Length: 431
Image (cartoon, rainbow, N blue to C red):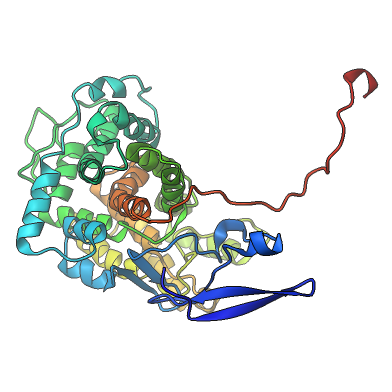
């Protein structure tokens, strides 16, 4: 950590305490309270950690007020337009954009690891057919530690590297297998002549009985979806991976913990919830009813896919996702789909209605990604697994960064205790 730029003073019970102030490259200054408990015997209280910097990181930066998302300093709009998912993976993992030779080597290393251990097929068959693909992924990714013993030592830099490549390469295969298992179709092996996104689509939609040709527009759209979800600073699942990793857990267990956290509807399940809401509305003529419910604080209803916890302006990822949505829906010729018509009318209202504009409830990335995935033929149960594939590189990058910290400590949040004070045990006969 850089030297503090100045000192803040805290006055408490007649005593003064110095709090070093650190200035980041971007974003607000940070008060260093690490010594506050030891010196003043007080904790800070911050439910959800929304005002607490729990780590240093050089990977991703978000400015919610400006609607900016930077990966290693590069705006997401530029990366989505000019780069690819695997190039972004390299950037997140190693800090700089690769040369042509470095990118070719990285793509080759990922491609060579796309297959999973053959015995893992038997592991899938232990799940019920109607198991949610995310339940399957949590179990299978966690079980990777039972199959790949040569990449479990977190103190070995090479083993950390092998584990990272394996997970980036195998998560699409595992997710596709979870999907195939849920629909009763045979597993499709990876086809390494295809692109990363194209290979995933092939494993999901190909069947042994006939050829499946990956449409390049759909492959590009899937690649963009993965790029736009690759990392998002210290969100709930990333923080979960870091917390699990702080205990020294193996990398596969840490990523499985991240997948479990991502499964929550308030996190990775938002695009599924958004599409289900659009289907519930059903037709354009019912939109006013739902708009009225959204404006009524007592209704308990909220429009999914609008606004964002961090972005107080337009979600920069949504602009790129909307372009992909237009391309995919145009290609598939389903512009007149009722769900899509509801989505377009809701989008128009959100951009024009004073209520939505004043509260900055703009369509976010989940609003458009669910529409695209539905158009491609994915059931809603696969939306979050695809999110997990995309976010894997972000989790791994954050995990590797944390492991490399010199003063890394196990995570141990404190609490504001509001329970009973100390009291004596009373024998059951006298209660």
